[in-house]
Amino acid sequence: GNLVTDYFMSAEIANLKPSSQAIYRVVLGTLVKAHGHRLARDLPTTKARKIIEEIGTNRPGMANLTRSIFRRVMGYAVSTGIRNDNPLAGVPRYRLGTRHTWTDDEIAAFENCWQLGTRERLAFSLLLYTAQRGGDVVKMRRSDLKNGAIRIVQQKTGAEVSIPIHPALARVLKAGPANGLYLIGDPHGRPIKRATLTRLIGGAAKKAGLPSKCVAHGLRKAALRRLAEHGSTTKEIAAVSGHRTLTEIERYTAQADQGRLSKPAIDKLP
Image 1 (cartoon, rainbow, N blue to C red):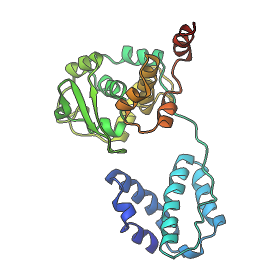
Image 2 (image 1 turned 180 degrees about the horizontal axis):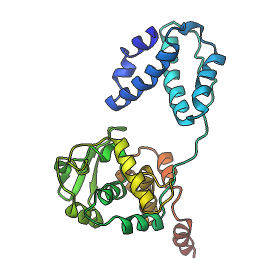
Image 3 (image 1 turned 30 degrees about the vertical axis):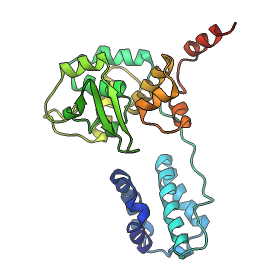
Image 4 (image 1 turned 45 degrees about the horizontal axis):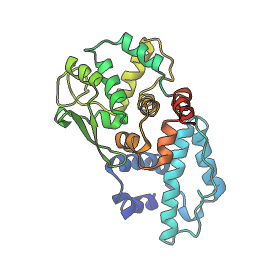
């Protein structure tokens, strides 16, 4: 418990963005509640592995997040002389499945169910036509609309991006609903959180007859897939998504239609 308290006073935490600090507090708060009384210097790798595996039994994604943050804390313990080794160094990550990328048929089914003027269609279109994360979409304000584009500072990366407003998104924005300072809010125009947006899309997708794998984040992947399928370069895609590495772009565009991409390649042969 004292180690975590000291860690939150370190430069490593101070250098994190507020959204990341909040995640660290949740994860480490849970750890301290269960294990705060234990001696950090005596924690063996076997016990560290057990802590992570107990979480991974039902929540492998949370287990990976806990492992990553816990490992940083123990790295801090090594750097400050509390320990000589990091007990999380030998604890493996869980292999997770990838989020489903919406298909064009699924996109069409959603749009056929939710017409212009509904909150569901507005939320869906903001995700699909800006290719931004849900946490950034819920922060978009009407004042961010300038010169035919939406200007965003991404919470996760700090990247500043300007996304031109696609004609389809322009029609949706014009149809509304348009109340409050934010582009997508609650029925009264008040700001919402990312989790609320996720539930809104999930419920709307279910009513559109779509499978449960059609979630909000999959629309970001669908947007990048469509950019790749229509000939956008890696740099062009990164300019929209805010990604900084080729590996991240390749992961998000893995579902690009192989058939559409292979034809122009073959056509280039003499």
